[in-house]
Length: 171
Image (cartoon, rainbow, N blue to C red; front, side, top):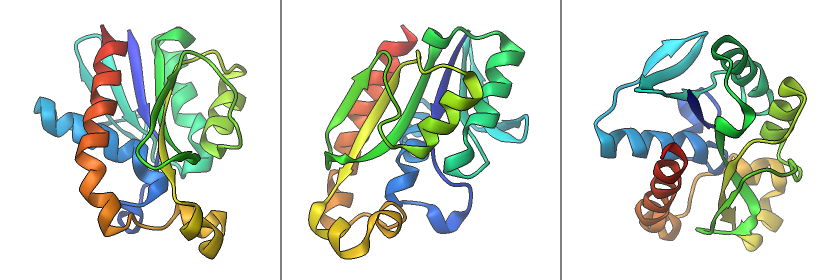
């Protein structure tokens, strides 16, 4: 059994914000593969074969509760969890996969690490960096800001790359 988690915030007002890049990636994946979302343990979830897909409905910084609940219930090994999140320290559009790692200041990953008591799980970070805008807005407002028009044009290409990482992980 595998678990693919996209991080984001649950309210519609956060759609297409940088912090919802994980939700956006999974929604894109579902559209490409013709999958439909359901609900499990109070989270948006779906199962396709031996893979669960999850969008925690706690806020981004508290994502660990839902992830840990799935992991414990289904007895999923840490190496079989893939977490997809944004990273404002990465250049916009860069997609980085790591088989393990530190949270690196990402509060969603910190929450998952704390809930699981470990950080030995794969993750895909989607670069949302825009230093000029980040300096102007500050970190909190920046991660909750929407993509610029120029960035939006590049999202399908970026999401396709993330979909490839998801498919590689599943295989």
